[in-house]
Image (cartoon, rainbow, N blue to C red; front, side):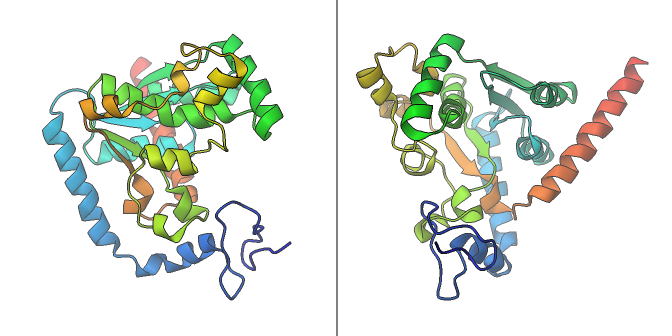
Length: 266
């Protein structure tokens, strides 16, 4: 087994390539950050935001796929700093923990509109078993629905921008031709979005689940995508992604706003 000489990730991870110095592509991406013109990328982001505001002048103009964790909390705070009016779309798990519930509720308390989609627990139980047996991933449904629910919601509500966090191919390793990718589309989802060889049609054709049962896990059709142009982008392409910063910003802003709200109540 070959491991990266810097981060010790194994070469068996899909799309993980090593250079002649036995350093993986994720580590190389990180080390090459200083070669990126971040000022230019920031201007690109601001241009996309200006275009978004022109398309949607009132109401929600940005969807944040949100778990309530550090990264999506940072994304929501950052979107608001950039002048966007975001709505958070959450695909909850079938067994949400107490801390998970508190994280989602904290975002509501500090002033973010949040839409929660909760799975049909009977359908989810079927999916959990199938996914565990076939690909060893009981969390396949939430891995997929965090990509499918936001865009379906955006189309139905004519919200022109979806702001995802990091580009996984940059942060964790992937094909070189994906390092300049700013957009998340159907092709990206099918290749990198956690499908792990399973498609919605597999459950319908091979496991007798219905179209209705699989609705929340379906990506929009090409016809639906043509009805309203959605721009799904990675924030991590336009600014250096830093999970430690995300933790610090999230803790500081959430705590600060919660204390402020508490004083108002008192």
